[in-house]
Image (cartoon, rainbow over the protein chains, first blue to last red):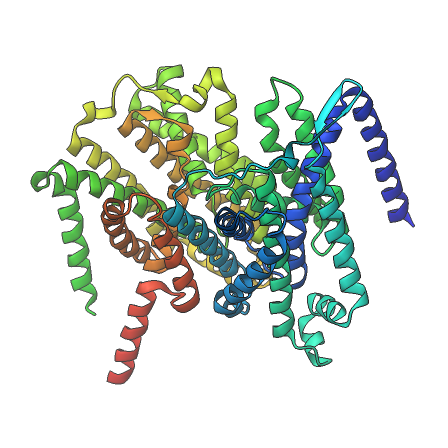
Length: 307
Length: 311
């Protein structure tokens, strides 16, 4: 009961804060929610892998970058719209992710956690520098008309397109929740995440489940790569910062808590937008995720010492 | 192999390293300086790794040291040599603060926080325009030691000597037992009376002092510091790849790796100006998957096998 009451208080405080911000600086709310959607949509696949396969994938953002490059070249070659590329990108990246998983990560599952960290760090470098080697560090962008659609309410005018990320993030969280609680495969994945040995004893193919979950996560991030292309310019290092921010969001929500990532993203997105609203503070916005993750780590270690 | 023979060999290499400026031109000296700098960083990274903690923050503390040293000269009127010592102290202080906050929740959390350090320090320095010169950075009036090629080489070599000395001290003192115990099994280490937090904090601070110190040497020997040059991800990536390839948990391994990869890096830089770093990524993956002990580990294994046959 105590936990529920505290959550209710937190939610109420959050709503009050949002209303105050909305009345005082409506653009902060709009831009904050838009970037929160983007952060959440990128962080959720990482949370999925971390929660079930228990691997911190430092190449997470790089998978998105690779998918974005693949969609970019597919779209410029065929004149296709990046939106149509979302599903093919997801499928192709899933295959690529599964291949990378089978060739590298699967072999390191039994080795110490920190080896896995170095391994995925090596993957991240290989992907970003490989793209740099093949396509140079030049930024690339596809300009689309519908992206610049804007809405005017009173004196307020803002872009509407980035709200797509909010819907995608919500759909991802809801879809994954349904998948993990309603389908047999999803339930099996959840069981493997909680206790791989126990799951193996009751007859779940742990190795297959890991591969499946990794492929599913890379599929989601691959689709995001194509979607990301609609709005932003891409370059080899574009994914890196998202890896860091995604991890901080997953850590804030608590590993295994996918809906919690949505809340954490709103917190991060709004605080960044709030900082950007002030001229003198603008440059400091990118430091917030670090402050948040430090706060989370401190909170955990204090709680750990008490018990 | 004969122990005395190895000692004589090491002494010869040391003499040759000190005497190098006598028979090498400016370009080989420059290459040697790079190799030595990365070697020293690789050794400090490995020192912390012996406790089972992975730091991705080398570039952060290195860059912080470079800035501390350049700022010490420009804003506090320090002499260049003093500013290098100040750089070490400053980086150590930063590490003490950060380590105190995060080392209780170690492992993955520690690694991820250090991964962000270079970026965070870069943002801080870029935002303190008036004090740090912002994105354009700072330029010194002159380079330390008048910019003499052999002087700069010896200065960098002195940095390496500090790292080597610390690493050997770690191997011979109580640090070795404490860190190995922590790496192998934290619970067992704790129950034998090891204060894990204090040992890890001490190790993190000591390695960061050396990294900051090396950053100071770097800043003074090039006479400038910009956020993009001193927080370059290479300062994390190369030492990491070198130590891994050479063989972790030893002093000899990173030395091996640094010579191999340092020379390869010079060659690759000329062949492929952009994107040659992909090689390091691939090396890291291959070493972790197939030769976790690195090259030194392979040699040790081969040695042991041949001795086993003799016996």
